[in-house]
Length: 139
Image 1 (tube, one colour):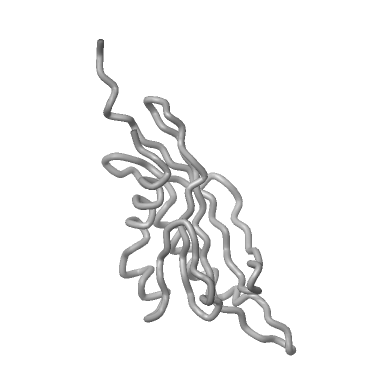
Image 2 (cartoon, helix red, strand yellow):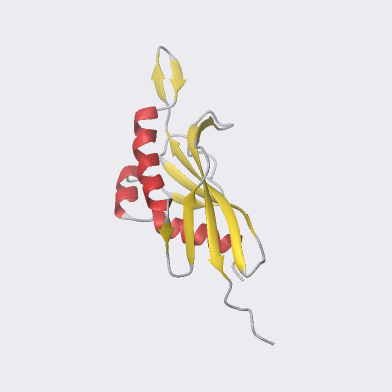
């Protein structure tokens, strides 16, 4: 049986590639489940799982949050939409319609730009996940 940890590990593996690492910069990171506090000035990705069923064909869901430092315009901090768009489009291309040996991922829902409690902005990308359990035995 696969679980929520497997989802975050699998999706982080899809994202831990040179095309993403270079966009995150030297201090950017890819985190599983949560982003540490004090990272508002860094470009990061956070992979979350929203759970998975315990059926033979397991269905799960999660989010990838793309954090990009804010910029100042007219004395106000706003989202850096240009940089966010570049990173989000690469993430979307890596997650949508991916068929791996043990699982598949796809983008199903609309994506949203949001503001976190620390004032930083992130782009939320919901994804779906499917895996076939291999521990079922014929009786």
